[in-house]
Image (tube, rainbow, N blue to C red; front, side, top):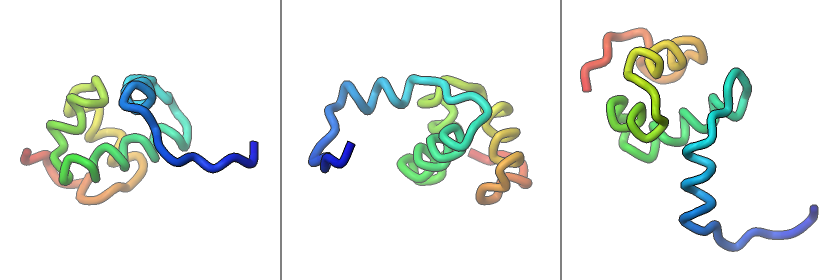
Length: 74
């Protein structure tokens, strides 16, 4: 829309974090962003995303993110 965004409310971030972006690029970008925000703690990232660690591991492996091929050690 051509407008600059100066800030995002906590409510907007929470809504984005809780929304499931199944099977698309946004899912990848969301999962990667969350993982970065929690210092690569996969257990915490899975908790925030509302999925179990195995599901997170599968998504990391699918998108070849980080050390996804290794067993989760968090």
